Amino acid sequence: MNKALHVFALMALLATPLLSAEAQTPGFGELYYDGIVVGTVVPPASSPKEGRDNLYVVPDQRAVIGVAPGDTGYHGGHWAVHIVAWNVAPYVLTSEEEVLMAMINGDVTIARMLSLDFRCPVQPNG
Image 1 (cartoon, one colour):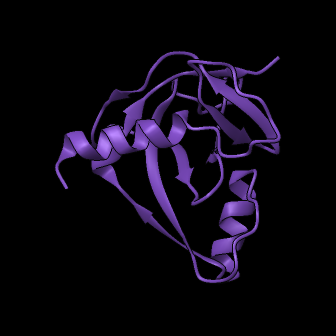
Image 2 (cartoon, rainbow, N blue to C red):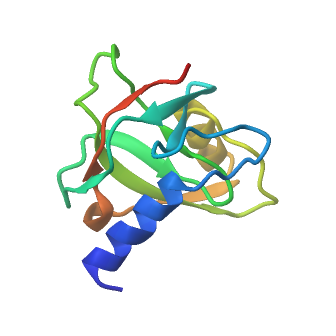
Image 3 (cartoon, one colour):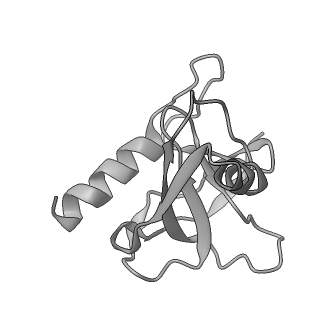
C-alpha cells in the first residue's frame, strides 16, 4: 500500500465516529486520553518517521493517545503511530496504560508504523 493511501486510511479512521452513542463535532476527530475523549484541532498532516507522541490505532474504537496538551513530553501532536491487533475478544481501551497492560497480558500485539506518523494537535472536548 503506498504512503498516500496509508495516510488517507489513518485520517479516515480518526475522523470516523466509532461509537454511535456519543456525538461527534463535525470536522473534528475524537481520541481517548486517560479515559476521557479529546478532539483534534485541525486535519492531520503526514509527517512520516517524525512521531514523538504515542498514538495507538485500536480496531473498532477511537484511537488512544499517550500525552495531551499540558503534559510533560507533549510535542504538539507529532504522533508516533502504533497499530494494535487483538489476540483475544476485543474490549475498550481508553488510555495508554490500558493499551500497554493489554500488551503485557498478551491480549494485544502492537506494531510501530513509522510511515504513518502524522501531525495533528488535540484539545479537550466540551
